[in-house]
Image (spheres, helix red, strand yellow):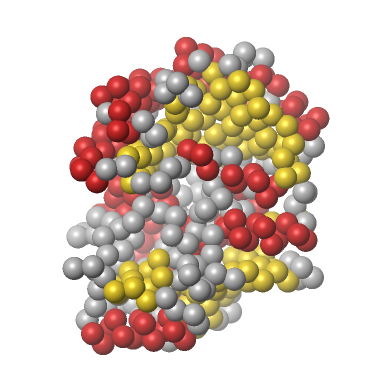
Length: 424
């Protein structure tokens, strides 16, 4: 049976919808910005994206008031008018709610940390329909939990972010290489990461070129002028890319660089952490990706990517300071399978897991315990019959999260993403 969808216009509307779902025994699902892969929904869907999507900038105090249905492209558009920004992922249509409550890696993370590290307050609708403020002094335990604990405690209808000064233009480079050059590209990535500065980030992507053949793409970013940017990525240019698209770009366009990789239709992410940048996992990933394209033309728009953030700022926050448990200096590896027809879904799911498993084995790790960055972990985030994956997602913070769950949602009303079992 198709779910009923409600489009609240006020925070009180959201609270009323939660109470209605509870009183009628309806399964409850929340849609915020609407970026992530759709999950199975029944009962009642509360869709914030239609009407609760305003952004207000307090330039004097460097704060952004962002409603829960927004995407970060809206935040960037408004904040850049005042020369300000908040770390905001790597694609323009990412939703504010999911990114923030689940972590928030982005191009600016090297300078400002995760998105959740810039959160100063939130308005939350709880499972009983109450509306509360969560910050360092009010409901501080809830504030701790929503910074990394995802959607487990309530519906965040408004976020308040600390904004950071941001230059109007930044340097970017997109370099496309023949697959045969992968070994020297990995060598150069290792050289670059050893001297990488906080205002630099990069991404390696295995995708297809205009002829549908596998290609190796490196995307670099430096929050600087052209001279400094060119110097930072000179070594990559000297490798002899087939294509070189480099130069200054308006900051608000930064998060559109990867938009073309994400196409309409069905999408599944599978992720893991890489602790070292050895060639073998990358080589095996490219081989497996090439095989995927050959065996399953339906998945031609799929890609594999690896993120290279300067992690000192992220790691400087103690693991116990927020619910986010993955602050170690690692590389986020991401397999993204995309397809059009629903009939291919089962095959796509198996192929995605197989490709990710190939990378894991080459890196001497195990997908059973290495679930990577939780915001990318579509493959396991909804497997909530037990809390096995939730314990992996939240690590050392899980027991405290269980206590917070007991306080704010003891009956498990919010249980779609790495569901937390309340403490006994």
